[in-house]
Length: 87
Image (cartoon, rainbow, N blue to C red):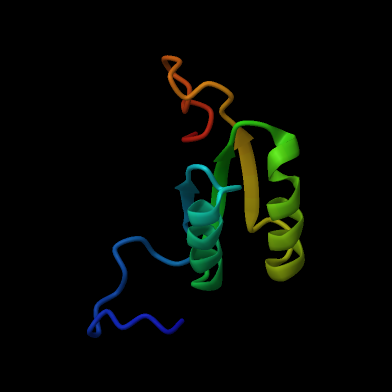
């Protein structure tokens, strides 16, 4: 995996599902890629399905089915906006 944790296991075990907000943006997509490369599953939030299509296709091709998914959070300011994303 390439991460030196000085012999300690990571706090979140590889294979776990992690949430990355703004996954179709520059930083979010790079963070998601690093998690996927390290063996984690990623759920990414985006404001629309259309905006996430490219990154979804890329990560599915690169890491295979079932490793990456997206959830639409159209209005981050709305109460409970991330409820579905964190389930």
